[in-house]
Amino acid sequence: MSSSIIRLVERDLERPNFGPEPADFAIEGEPIETTHEYYANAGHTSGVWECSPGRMREEQGEDEFCTIISGKVGLIDNVDEREEIFVAGDSFFLPKGSNLTWVVYETVRKFYMTAE
Image (cartoon, rainbow, N blue to C red; front, side):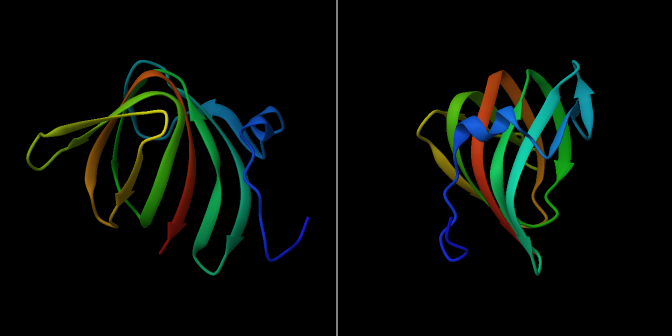
């Protein structure tokens, strides 16, 4: 693999470098998250993430871009209580400081990239 080009592959969740473990900030259910992180340097990360059904409340600690691979997740903006639903093929951006509730309706997998 080239160090200049990093291919993100869904099946790498079979050999995670984080988890499976209880999801941080769970407020409902017992969501379990698993991550295969490919890159972490100077406040930037990228990888593939999976989480089982449940709810997690979180203030976004960095900017994040995601593409859903499978499953169904809702993101509730805790300020205006508006919910957006995302399924396979959908992409979204979360600015640092966003106050959100993640609602995993069906086990979800996503590719992500974060930047502080």
